[in-house]
Image 1 (cartoon, rainbow, N blue to C red):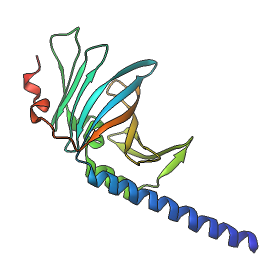
Image 2 (cartoon, rainbow, N blue to C red; image 1 turned 180 degrees about the horizontal axis):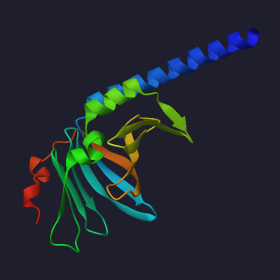
Image 3 (tube, rainbow, N blue to C red; image 1 turned 90 degrees about the horizontal axis):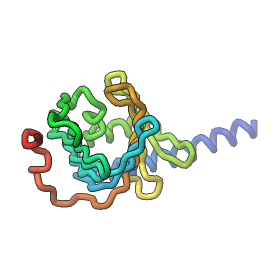
Image 4 (cartoon, rainbow, N blue to C red; image 1 turned 120 degrees about the vertical axis):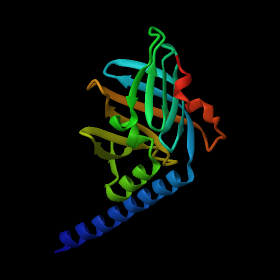
Length: 182
């Protein structure tokens, strides 16, 4: 009987602590309109770094350090352009995991409905979008978005870790005009 009481007590405090973390993550997301961050991305065994500006209305502009690759979303479309090609690759954003990763309300709803998980010192939620598995990480101290693990359009495992430099910076809207990229 004592064991059952201890288990119920442990479960109550454990679930309350996680609900408090979830609420803090939600509060942090609600206050953020955009992030300026550095990233490290691993696609299978290949590692790349760069800088991004993410605006939580499905817009992102990333420049990769060494490869010169750029990735831009205007909220509807996504382009990826490399230095070794004159023609950028265009994608409908809704066909990529960015469609959900760049949607603040979606992330808030998932934090509300999913259990916050901890593993190897990381806080995350799991979700699925169009048969793509997405693991979204949060910083364990400040509870900001910390990164994500997904599968790309070519079925490669992609892990992106972000280090936020600025929050709610004034953003030049021209950064997300994709038809100016040649």
